[in-house]
Amino acid sequence: MEDAAALIASIIAWAAIGVGSLCLVAGAVGVLRMPDVYTRMHAAGITDTGGAWLILVGLMFEAGFTLITVKLILILVFLFFTSPTACHALASTAMHAGVKPLLGDGKGDGP
Image (cartoon, rainbow, N blue to C red; front, top):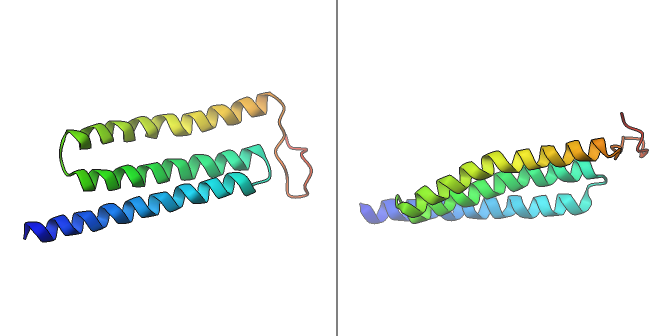
């Protein structure tokens, strides 16, 4: 019975790591393909946080309940607060610096 539980935990772990890796690759493609700084930050901020969370959760399932899991939870909490805050700070700084968002008509005449 313990082997079956370990196998299920390993499958969940590698599925989460795989999906998290795909999220991070999608975010990298979004950063390369998006037209302006604000949409690039959105692509990077959302997928970076989600992908990192999935990878960390997968690592937690793979490690089991040990001290390593506690450290991974602390990293997860740190990323939960710092990644969106950094993205917001970058967007706010770009707005204050006068970088205008690209609108649907292709002109950067935002607010």
